[in-house]
Length: 67
Image 1 (cartoon, rainbow, N blue to C red):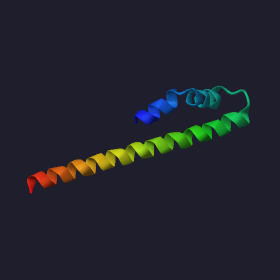
Image 2: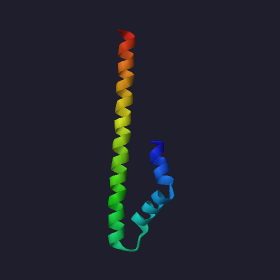
Image 3: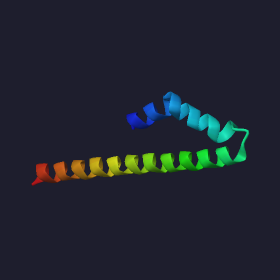
């Protein structure tokens, strides 16, 4: 999740966000919005996988303690 914040706050990330919504050219805006939505989807998928792995490991640790 820290990597996602760093990616958004970096100069290329800010530039992608800026050109996605404030570009005067429609084609550039559309392509950049597509790239932005893909990047957001990948980041959300990574966050979900990290959450599931942490949940699984915590559950496994509780099961081992109880057994």
